Amino acid sequence: MAVELNYKELVKKLKVLASDKDVDLADDPVCQALSNETPADIALALEQLPPEEAGRIFTTFGDPLAAEVLAKLEPKLSKNILGKLPEKQMANIINILPPREAAILITEAPQKQADSYVENKDANREVLQEVDARLIYANGSAGRLMTTHFVKLHVGSTVGEAIEEIRKTDPDIDLPEDIYIVKKEHKKNDRLKGVISIRGLLMADPRQKVEALMAKEVVSISAIAKEADAAALMAKHKFMTLPVTDKDGYLVGVIPADDMMQLTIDRMRSRYAKAVGTDAEAMEQLTPFQAAKKRVPWLLGTMFIELMAGTVISHFDGVLKKVILLASFMPVISAISGNVGLQAAAITVRDVDSGSAERKDLWPSIRKEAATAILMAAVCGFVLGVIGAIWSKHLPFGIVIGGALICSMLTAGMMGTLIPVLSKRLGFDPATTAGPFETAFQDVVGFAVFLWLATLLERFIA
Image 1 (cartoon, rainbow, N blue to C red):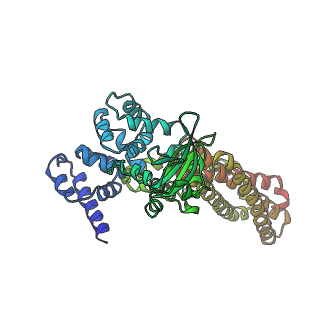
Image 2: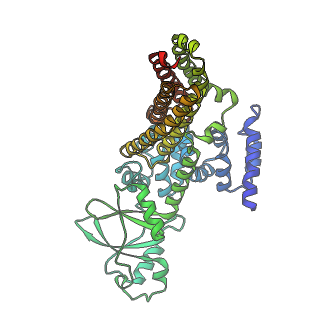
Image 3: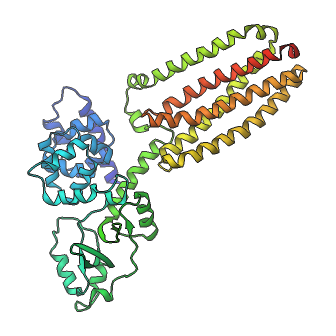
């Protein structure tokens, strides 16, 4: 509980400092606010601030503190901060970190910053080796998550030799706990033969061969597999590490559980924030003026599309004057269709932003929603058509009402499904665009079909 309170209190202090434009953040106030605070608490506090303020405060840190804090920040914020750091300072910070943590930051950094470090003559060779091993594989793959810094033993080693090998490792560098047993093949390639834990080694006779103790049925994952598959394997088997193999089955690295947990938590936070189609954290950080500026253009676009609906209505002014009852059903058609569109938009946005709906998987969701819209439109159109026929005492009037509702609902369902997909592909926020445009288009199409049918059947319904 004390840790939670400390980090929350620190957030308040930093918000006050960051909001005061007259305070020199390189001076005493920040130093006092951060005194006796752990890098983890500082990272948690910075993540609660708008990116600009977090970056402004970060620039006041000395390189040692900056390195520790940067390694603990969520990827999105660390990438933002790295993108604004001078190249020399970034290189200094990276060189302070252990190779594994440094490689994680570089592979997540903006391309320009990553290239500048790789080309820096003072770059850490171990870090570059780790970065090169990761960058061979695509972003989002298991290979991009793995580390090449782990303890491996060759077949034939004794327990005593294994323990001695572990003692030679740098105690300041965090290494995965599992030890992998390999057999050298084709010069540098290691064939994975088994795995054993440090505890297993410590409890065994130092003279025993590791082959007698190791687990020989080792679950591994291909380096080109998806990171989600790696996470599923680790969770299912409760592994502390997961070995990664290349296309030929040779061991190329391991994924530590703590790295995977951090990544999974960050993904979950991001997807939760986008569950309704927008980045809630980013929206919370906007001022009212910024939020309005972001949303007003789409509302103005909706206004102009709705004016088209007004033009359609004025074009059929004659039939409305003759059959006043038509006007009574227009709000009903608009409201029902609007709800269909909003439901379709919410479902599609969830699929788009959850990460489960990739491009190849999205069309089945669209087809399913289209089929659902057709069934709902048929039922609602029939019911409203019957009500219209009874109310007006004219069957053609009911046909007009039912047909118009069906067309309007289908349009709303289609727009509510397609607009979020197109918005996402074009780089816009689906939640900001889906609602306004879906409503506008279904009004234009719904009213046009409604009044066109009414005009065709005017002599039967007047």
